[in-house]
Image (cartoon, rainbow, N blue to C red):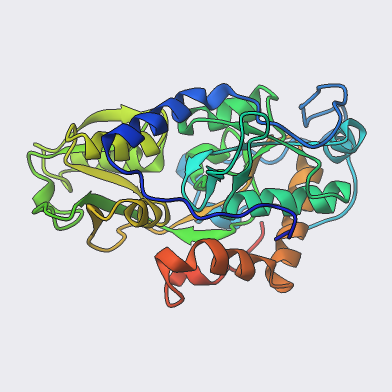
Length: 338
């Protein structure tokens, strides 16, 4: 989005040796990535006295969770004011998901450059809130730590391919949806697995701990919609670790968001998507539940991002090469607010 940012294509992993490097990167999730702005007071909390708590939504009463975010607004409250006072936005992201949030291969030890579709969105939010897209600190967070990072005040928000669902709405607030996706199966091109069906019988399937993929696998196996012999015991902190397990032959298939799987298949031609997506899900920006002013402000930013072409430009740059222009995901979802 900004000419001064270096962009480069990520080459294929180049075999197991390179994947070991990926594993090492995943282990480094606690790393606070370099930033461009002076340090403020170090606070990353988004709550504050006098912030009205949002309506609690019980999972059993929840339908269409993607339609439950607050309407857009620009009024400042404690959460936005705290970010402005601090002088930078703290964002939880991925650093290992190709085309979504990953390290530019030309990064140096002194300066780590992150890029991808989610990273573009995070920079856009910082630009609107603080007038500068680079007034931002990224914190690499594993899949299973996205919610704790928000609740513990480690970050102001998480922009990390995070699906909006009813259970999560009991723990964090979400923006309106910014991307349509769904679960899909990834397996070796030579595999006889055909999709999310009986061909997964007697197969070892990997998913990320705390992910909607694992929740779906667990629920469907218990309900008899998935073969009882499907082994879903392999879970990992970071979704990308499943690809490593797949390449090492430790599992037979991966279940993850189709958007992520498409990027992984682009990295490694020895794996491919099997069958169609079998769920409909939406990514949202996750924030602290009390930070209602920040939620409304992010929704205003997303409205502008869709209307001024910023979303489409980012999709065309990062995701069109793997997902195409005819995909349902190729246009931004239109929100319905609570």
